[in-house]
Length: 527
Image (cartoon, rainbow, N blue to C red):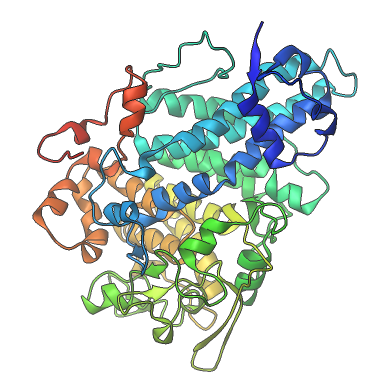
């Protein structure tokens, strides 16, 4: 007889799910019989809730930031940074680094696998749990599983692909890595199947933004297709999102209060929901800062104070490649998302405003007066919003480059987000960006300006590297924040070094796992 360990029961109870009160009278033994649990709709949906709740743990949010943001040119060392974080910034990542631990994502995957395995049987036991409800819930579980695997495959390149729940002590848990192709194919399969049954609306705004919908699936799929260089499919998925009449960009003066302070704005597509009375977003508080109380663990931006001193890449006040015209000279995002010179952390970078403020007012000279979020509130974590999708479509069109119209359409999309935050500027003109390479760089800059600190930048740079198969190209962006040591430069010239290592303890536990080849090279490996 299959068993459900008390550990899994405890996870559900800790999260405090609704409709679990009848289940609190668990047997005193150390295990609960699975067949006695999957009886009602409320029991099934409680497990589904654990899929969402698993994503908002500190461990998951930390890795979304560390894997997707910290390794990029957006962040530099903060005033009280942990050693493992500093090593990541310093290109000294080893298989013993805490952030090589992928366990938090596999926990969520196991919740999804458990639901998908057992929930269909509840339809025959509880007449209230209809096949229609089941299909909607399955779409949610498949989407969350796909999202987890998307983070893993982008960060580690090859990972174990596990589609069955860990429920039986007789199971073989020594699962080997699957290829990137196999993982991406499964992600696309899950998301494509989920599209058939997902809801367009739950009738409640927090659910529409915080639970899986048709638009959120399309946004994730667009991102997957962009990573997989399926550009026409990416455009098609972006169009699905752009057809959603409930979505619209907020006015620029509402970016801080509506999008990043209150959350669930009109431009939000999918964001992880936090509640100060249930689960506080401690990761953002710790990493980015809170209540004007310093600058977070590594809450410092690497430009313009740091990179600008070296005369290197800066996405604001940037000269167009074929003219003397400058981009983003008065870009409001520079004031809303980062602090000015009065908000230095340690002189090497500007502090982070995004997510930390409740409001930001500007005087005639665009000097910012920030009002900080306080301890009575907590931030949601945005996974996808409309401007992200607009710029994904622009990137895909540039890569398609079937005719000049693709490039012109991409520039129009860039202007959509650009002009929102450059209210006194003229449109960016095609004559100043009349080549594929110029528009590639423009889209990359605009995504950086728009999506600062949202866990996107490293993956944006990785897409650039994957297209050219030239890891050295990333040094154009990263070198100003590195010490310039020969070993750092040597490491960054190896493609596999751009992916994370597999944690040493995982290799010891699972003898079928093999380490990322880079971390086996005696010229680089340590620990």
